[in-house]
Length: 253
Image 1 (tube, rainbow, N blue to C red):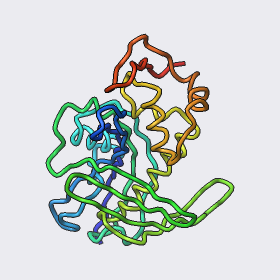
Image 2 (cartoon, rainbow, N blue to C red):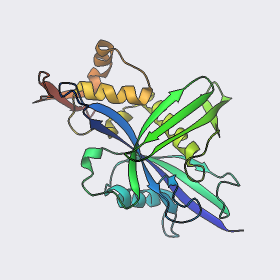
Image 3 (spheres, rainbow, N blue to C red):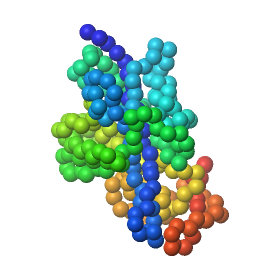
Image 4 (tube, rainbow, N blue to C red):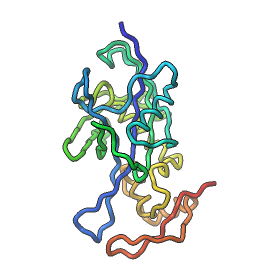
């Protein structure tokens, strides 16, 4: 039996788009980078970027290499979120995969994406026992559901059983795990700022928090809560017909 060691990289970013109402604020979208496979197995299916790890590199170095290839970016936030070792996860043999999550400021991406790569807007619909993921780009809409099972309620540890399969290998479940890990980090750390440009408005920051947490936040409460994490720059921006908003940045401790 063939044995291999691969890496899969979940690259999250945030984009902004304005609707037809020029006076409205641009809408924020959480997105994930996918690549279309050009060989078997799963020819023409969308997958997470990644590949086999070279003999002279660690799994993290492989992820750094893949990130640079796909986006041209280096020195971004990246963390390992798990090892995927299901016996039947890959039809080519016994293939283990280490997954990393990367958060990028999409405004820094200057180069075109590699051939076959595309950003997909990502939305999440949850109920008590399942999570529905919807992925959209200009040409495709991908939808699937996973069943959430409690492993240990005290530590909020869950397993995810795939109910539909739209991505290659076990990437559907990997994406859900990465999304839930990101959400947990949002609640306990300042990880959100890795998705933001250097300067941003409080309103833009609030939109990104709402995207990641899946809920609407009260303006006044959010401003109080975030006040010790940001500092104002003295620079302003004007959006459409709205009054200028002061730009802020992350406050380094």
